[in-house]
Length: 101
Image (cartoon, rainbow, N blue to C red; front, side, top):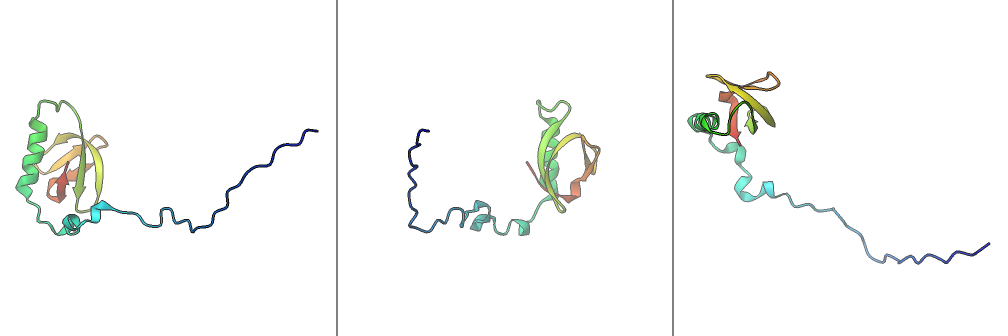
């Protein structure tokens, strides 16, 4: 039987500290108090109206919406006076929307 060569293993003589510290840019000074920012209802209404008036809106539009109770991506298909209707049939109250992207 043929003898296989030995495998070289490099010795580790230092402390390994991968991923012990992570930089999270969302928590920079500019964004620390994002919850305390005053949101303007008319500004949100204008953004929503601009989305529905745009030429590329035909049937549905994927938006990232931050509300008082959650933050998620939604596919919006319709707008009523006081809510947005998602493709899943959920209603997002416009008065609860803090930011829309």
